[in-house]
Image (cartoon, rainbow, N blue to C red):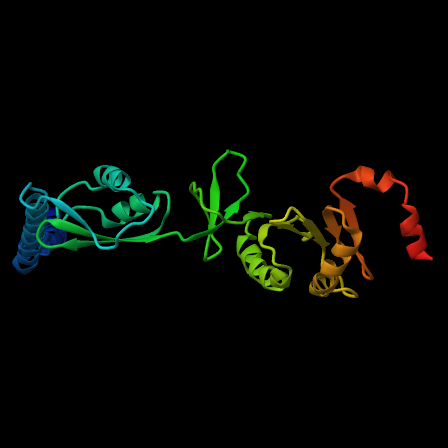
Length: 287
């Protein structure tokens, strides 16, 4: 009996520390019992809230109507761009105040105007924007696009959309070839100076065949580059002999075909002259 009564007591005393001891240790190691860590988290939250509040106050302040934009100062005198176009672009693009205006958006809006190649926009304290414009310097007409938009070529060989009444040559070529035509136009024009004519049209086909239109109505078909007969050599030979040939035949010529290695073919304006009989004097001259 004595053994039976003491055994349960020993069992209860052995289990109590095992059940209660670890629980107390877990509670003591919890987050809420670590004041240093709680203080650090609290400081971080306070700092984050202060930064967010300060940024919100800055945004609110600069968006107030305290710094309105009152003036657009154009630093470069425009030649082709009108005052009405500038005012329209300014009303469309300038939004917000001195701090919130989108300078890149304003720049892109002005660059969409006809004749504007580049635009530069800066803030001028306290209530103005400065605008610098670089206009296109047109040197030739480009073939009208399928949409019907009039296009021009500038001195950089770039094609842009605009209209003009200036006396300029007409270019026609594949997309992306404007700079090439511009360079060749200068070369051909220098070569044609001895003839006293002006190059008013230059065309390049998709197969890289060249055709020249002169102001006297003559069309020169140069064709493609040839290894045995370079394009420039064929044109140079034609320029050297053309004044004498034109004087001898005394016929208005429409087309001169220079695609032959050893000569050229001529097409008269009036094809009926080819059907006329040769005069007796001409026959005697040929004997």
